[in-house]
Length: 486
Ligand SMILES: Nc1ncnc2c1ncn2[C@@H]1O[C@H](COP(=O)(O)OP(=O)(O)OP(=O)(O)O)[C@@H](O)[C@H]1O
Ligand SMILES: [Mg+2]
Image 1 (tube, helix red, strand yellow):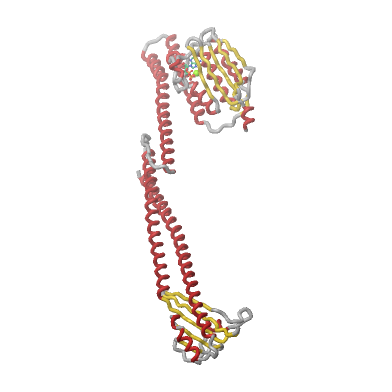
Image 2 (cartoon, rainbow, N blue to C red):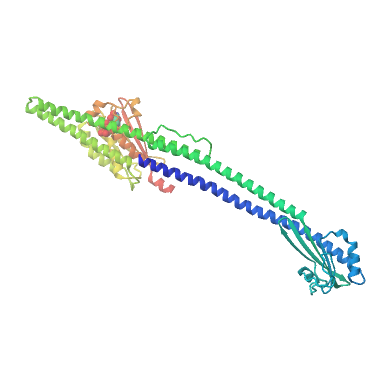
């Protein structure tokens, strides 16, 4: 009991882990995807705002530069005059410098004549071989809903850089837009993540509920209740697993039924000779018998013991045949084995006045252990003698039919009634129990034959007419065609 509950615990702990791991895997994967999407979207959005700001502010700077370049003399008053006309530009700070970076105008409050050495201004005034008329410069920072843009363009007069216009713009409208976009993206991401977590938990829960169903069913089967069937519903892999399991249980149930049937049949069969022995010994012990009668009784006891012996040997042979693992087969012709069996049974045949007729010319090699073939031929020929009539005959024929080697054992005996034909391969089945018990039959011979034939990929068939005779046909794949196929 303790062991069972321990294994139950292990099973459920294993489940929880699997379920949690599944859910976590989904969550991690979707989180990574959403974070990447988030970073990408907000990057694209930044870039778009940057480009629009750059073009608008640089445009304003260029406009101012062009206007200022029209002045004949560049000094504080001419610049102030032009700048006053440019009021519609609406920038946060506007600086105009001369060639050396000294301020001619600064809306930020820097006095005229002082140097405004901002990096953008210095870069705009720098003349090089690649940029003989200076550079248009733009820089941008964004922080918490505010964009701070800076642009500087040179003032060019007949191809010469004579000064620079510098503008800055603090923008809370555009910055606010970026902030709200980022916030919306974050909210959508979080919402999606919550949905993913809920869904993965729901899915893994449903999955583990289905697994639990199979586990409960398995435990019921383990306790020995094979009648249970699991109905998984749905149409996924677990449904197939459930069906496979039902199949397996059915097989287990069948083999369990066969096993207990076998045990009860076997004990019943063993009981009969044992009861006879007990009866005979009691009679000897209780009655005053003459020596001849005692001898007769003791000989009967010996016969019963022989019968028990034969039955035990056959049971052993049947169990071996049923449980045999992959065996090393050999390529053999069947005729020598048939002759060996015939030699072995010739005394029985003579006693029963049965004549052998062997037609073994059309012999084909087959892949089988010689011992197995011997058992098949022996049991069939022994039956052919045992259930024959005095003066009858037993024919063993070897032939070939297409890709098969065929062994036919036919007799001119009593035959088997049609209703018994389907039972003769069952263990302990005998058509005429009294007669075959008398002849020492245990009803195991044909069961052994069928098991061995099937194990060797062969088939066995029987046809019979009461009063005329019986024919058993055993078919094996011919070895030469097997070689051709491989
Ligand atoms: N050639 C046959 N002719 C008529 N009846 C047969 C023939 N072969 C088998 N039978 C019937 O089938 C039954 C089962 O045969 P099987 O060989 O399995 O058992 P058995 O011969 O009775 O005993 P065992 O072979 O174990 O010593 C026999 O009892 C017999 O009634
Ligand atoms: Mg037999």
